[in-house]
Image (tube, rainbow, N blue to C red; front, side, top):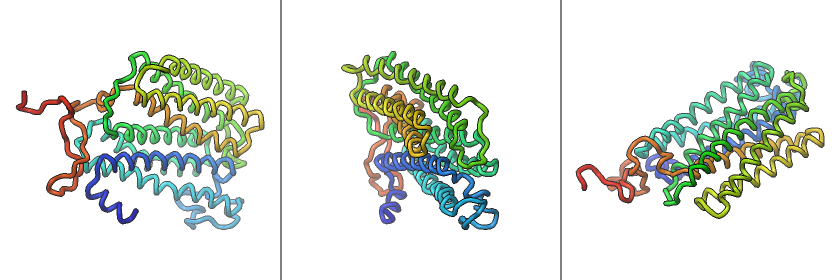
Length: 339
């Protein structure tokens, strides 16, 4: 990897951009999972200060803040993961800068990634300094969902168009509804966890909602989401782009697994292990929903602004220049001065 990275930085290509976007996507999912571990193990204040651990030391010390040393390292380890997450985000931005031309949507998503990760680092510090306020904890999780959507979007937009037609207009509208309801499900999920027993610390403040009422509201939103997805799968079972249909069917499977896991953890009294699995399952569900939404649409229409006939090529510059991707007209597109 150290030997490959300088070559990627000098002469990146579309393949490198997709790989970097995938790395950023995985890194953001992993840090959401470890953030969930911080919460369910009561390690949220294992490092009670920020940016240091205890006001003087960067790393945790035994007994710091009344916590076990392992709890301090759980929190500290989650902080350290911010650096590889930031590295992958900066790598995506760098490759977009060195290749192209790219449509506005790709450039903006690439810029959002590193800026968003820096914002997440600061928000994580605010969360610690506010004693794990459920408002900032919820915001921390939802901001990760935005970054996951950005990384998934770049990963999808950077692929070579395969010529598959878009799904029917009604199916595209249904996918937008599914994505909106998925957002509502995630938001209600943060209210449930912000009301429940896993606040990251025994003394962490909690929302004053009724846990049973919030769990029912969350479950109702999940049922609506599953119903919309079942209907869309039924409509597209034998028609529509194959890539989109496979992604949509996978989305339904993950939703059903998530729903079953949610009911199981509620019936068992919200055990920490199931809560952690449910959190990472939510991020996977959201990722697949974003990809399904994008794959229901025309690839070039998603790229939006600019010349719809310009796509990326992995052809290396003949002069060995720094940008590996050259703009080339798509099939059937014309250039200035041509008929």
